[in-house]
Amino acid sequence: MSQARRFAQYFVYAERGYDTVPPTIHPERIDATRLAIASMSLESFGSFFGDVHQQLASYQDGSVERPLEIPAEAMSDEALLYRKDVYLGIDETATPLESPVRRLTERYDIDLNVPPTGDLSGYDADSWRAYADDLESLLAETDAELSKGVSLEAVSPLYIAYLDANGDEHFTSVSDPLEREADTLIELPVLEARSLAEFRAFVVHTLTCQIRDCFVRMGVEPPEAFRVLGYGDFESAEQYITLEQFPRYYDPGETGLL
Image (cartoon, rainbow, N blue to C red; front, top):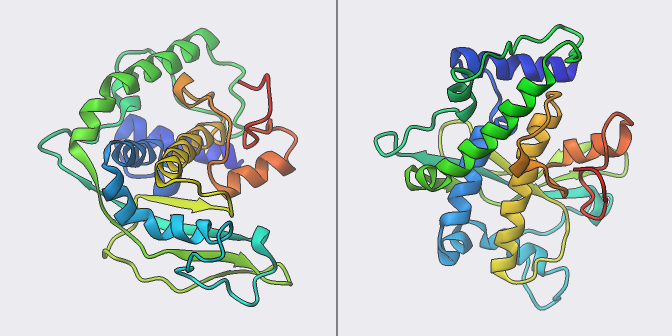
């Protein structure tokens, strides 16, 4: 049911252009964020995400001051996530943020309608494969073009989502930098931060995995560029762990999955 619901949201967006896909599971918005971060200077990246890097570095180096204190009621370090809401700035005159999927539906005669069960077995596998492969080519062709018209306008202050001893979820306070919904959510578990450049590469890879998660969780095979292993977002990783229908995409050590 969840897959069918997500696919229906994406179908209406791709076919009709309505804004029906929530930002945190919107592959085009996440991809625009990925491109913006990958193309910015390391100095600019540090100005937006240096607090996250510093917070994670404090786990390996006790001399590093933490921007945020860990809430005393947090169950453990494994039961919290560091979060940043990301707001895109899009120059529509330079390059409209047009859905590559919407452009491709005009090229392929593919019925994107899906029955309520979410069962895609009755659809033409060859057409879907060609559709996914061509989407990958289109994304590769437009990467440089998109990066010219998309930038990061703002990010939220660093905040924490955590579980207490009873398993209840809480969030530390955070102010919204802009009076609109964020375009992308980046949420990271405790991990080795390493250098700022390596951390940026990890964030870019995490966003790539988030795009994979968007497609997988709507019951569609991701385009080839997004058939990667690794952590994307917590909710998807949790489903890959607990639900037998999903392979362990979150685990970069798994083999033979993609």
